[in-house]
Amino acid sequence: MVASMNKAAIDRLKLRYQNGTRVELIQMDDPQAPPSGTKGTVITVDDIGNILVNWDNGSGLNLVPEVDRFRVISE
Image (cartoon, rainbow, N blue to C red):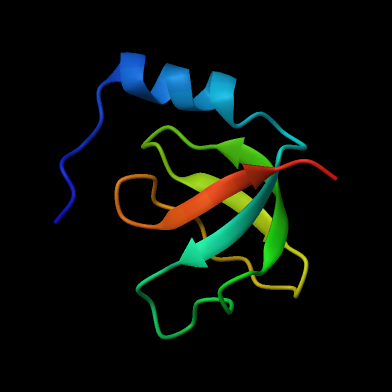
């Protein structure tokens, strides 16, 4: 189980992963996860620190920063 983030940590995520930021999935431990290498666009960071992503393949799974592996890309 992931420890909850404090407000300061969530605020930092919101600054780092603003709407429109492009990301690429490296690894997500979920049977419904998009394949590694899938790219997507950040929608927002929610109040518990999950990064909501509109994946290019249509998936809607959120990124959990302390669990999932991903990187910011520029296109």
